[in-house]
Image (cartoon, rainbow, N blue to C red; front, side, top):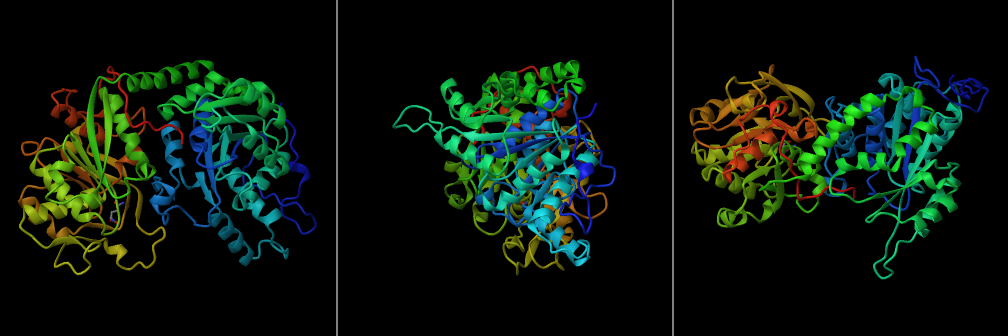
Length: 599
Ligand code: GLN
C-alpha cells in the first residue's frame, strides 16, 4: 500500500487558496520517491559525485533513477560560464549546456541525460515570468512562495513523470544558507510535506575539518551548519561526512547528537583515488540500505540484478587499480591550472587506460608557453599529446607549434574540437604552403580562412546557447582509422559544441596533400573527423566533436583508447589490434596517476 500523501488536500491553481501545487499531466502521487542531497559548510564537497554514486547503487538494485541538478545562478545554462571559474561546460545529447556534474551522472549511471535533468534559477524564473505574461496566475501577485517554489516542484515532478522514475535524485547546488538556493530548499520542504511520509529522504553532505595545528578532526562547523538546515524546516535523514581521512566514531557521534540523526545513518565519506570506488564505499557503509528502508523500497529491489551490476563495476575497479605500464600523455591547453576545465578528458583517459592495462600519467602544458624553439624540450617524454577544445586567440601559436612537432615527429596525437581546427591550420600552413592559413576566430580578416564560421553562425548575435550544440551523427569512411577504432562502424554519434568549421572550399586542397577527412556530417558539408594515413603517422586523429563527453567506465571512448594504445606501442607495448573498445579483451589491470578524488 502506498503511503498517504497530502496532495489531495492542497489546491492546484485556484483563486481562493494559498496553496499552489501544479502537477504535470499523468503525475501519480506516491509512485516516485525523492532523495534530496544538500551541502553544508562549503561547496566543492563532491555533492554530485556523492549523489550520482548513491543513485548508481539504487540503479544497481534494478530501480529506475533520474537525477536533477538545481543551480542557483541566473544563467539559463552553463554555456556562457568561464571554465576557469566553473569547470568544463558539459553538453548533453539534446544540446543542453550544463554543469560538469551532469557528466558525473552520465558516467556513473551509464545513461544519456537531457535538459529535464538540469534546472537553473535563470530557467525557473524565466518560466515564471513568461507564465505571468500569459495571465496564468489568475490575478494573483506572483511571489517567491508559492509561485516560484511551485515552478521548482513542477520541474521535479515533470522529471519523475517523464522518466517514469522510481527515485528522483535532487542535487541542490551550493550550500544551505546561500541566498540563491533558499527557494530550492523551501520548495523541497513544501514538497516533502505534500508527498507524505516514506516518499522523501533528505541527505546532508557536511564537512569535517582537521586543522593541522590541532592534529584532530573537529565537528563544530558541521554541527552549526546542520542547524541552518533545521532552521529551514528540514531534518536530515542521513548525514554524509566529507573529510580527507576516514571520520572517527567520536566525531560522528557528536554530529549524530547535535543533528538528531541515528549514528547508523551518519557516514564517513573520505577521499579516495578514483571516484568510481565511491559507490562501493557507500554500499559498504550501508547508505543504500538506509535509503531503501526510509523510502520503503525493499519490495522493488532486485538482489540478483545488483550482484551482476556490482561484479561488472568491480571488474573495472580491478583493472583500474593494477597498472602494468605507464604512458605519459600531454594535455596542451590554456586552462591547465584548473583541472576541472578538462574533467571529461581526465575521465576518458582513465577509462581508456583501464581498458588497456595502462597507467596514464597526465602532463599539463600551458600552450601560452610553447613556441617552435622550445616545443621539443617542453614535450620531451610524452608518449601522446592532446590539444583539447578552446576558444579565442591566447595560446594558439603554441598549439600550432605543438601540432607541427607531433606530426613531424610521429608522436600520437588526438585533437579535440579546437584541436582539429588547429591541425587543419597547421597542415595548410606547413604542408600545403598556405602560409597565411588561419581561422577567422583568430584572424577575422585572414586571406586564407581555412577555418571559418558555420554559415548559420554568421547571422547570429550574442553568445548564449547558439553554437552547433549536442549530438549529431558522423558518417565514417570505410577502412579509415576512425572506422576501425569503432569496430568498422559506418556511422557514429558524437557531441558537438562549436561555432567554426573547416571551410569546404579548402577541403580538396588539403586532401590533395594527404589529409584525410574520414568523418563527415550526413547532411551538411561539415568535416567532423580527420586523420593522417597510418603509413605516414602512427596515430594522428582529430575531431570537430567532443568525444570525451560520451566516455563511460564500462564503455571507454574509442578515440582515447586508440591514443593510449598508440602511446603504449611507442614504448614497445602491444595492447592489441585497433578495434572497437567493446570487443577489446579486458584482462589487464590498470590505474591512473592523476587521481580524481571528490574535491
Ligand atoms: N573555438 C572553436 C569554435 O567555436 C572551437 C570550439 C571548441 O573547442 N569547443 O568552433
